[in-house]
Length: 148
Image (cartoon, rainbow, N blue to C red; front, side):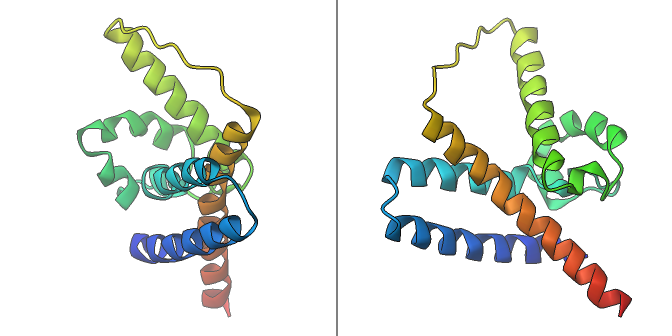
């Protein structure tokens, strides 16, 4: 499997390609910003490798909050559902949302989410999903090359 550095370099390169494409397609700059921010967050903090037993770059980036991902590591075996291109990002978003809710509930802070427009949600979801697909494709490509 490629290391964290390879995933990050190829991920950032693909982000530049995506932004270039979106700008040339006439996509609104606010949507490009939402896409780019969620893309970087997903690439750096919501990697499919959060379930690695020995830890990953993504897990280390969480710093002292990394402990929040230990139940996730117990629920999902590495390269199992976490590396599924449809269910992987969904499981991490649901898990992350649940943990945020638990933390804010524990300190008794009410969270009021604003109503979001459909295009903002789509830009966010695409930003989370694209680096995840790239990650899984790189892992599969390297695995296939090493098998040959």
